[in-house]
Length: 117
Image (cartoon, one colour):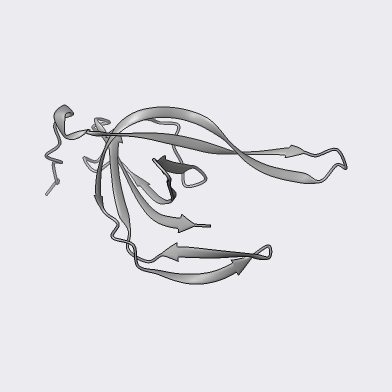
């Protein structure tokens, strides 16, 4: 049985940025990771009350949420798990990208975890 997502355009109350990872070279030829705007879209955001764990990466303390946030946007074919969502000051790593209506291409569900640096 198919699950139909009960989302209406009026439910997309938040504006989010979907950003793609871009790797460039610095003056010394080393790779530098930056983020570029893929799209700014309206979204419905559910969940994501912050609870997290701490880790260290590249000498920086990273706090990663273990409570996922669901971000629902109108369907886009160019979003992947290599992208991220920026919602105000919050940065959300995309863990899963799925079409909740199995190929109808109306909505896109992004299951994300919050990262605070």
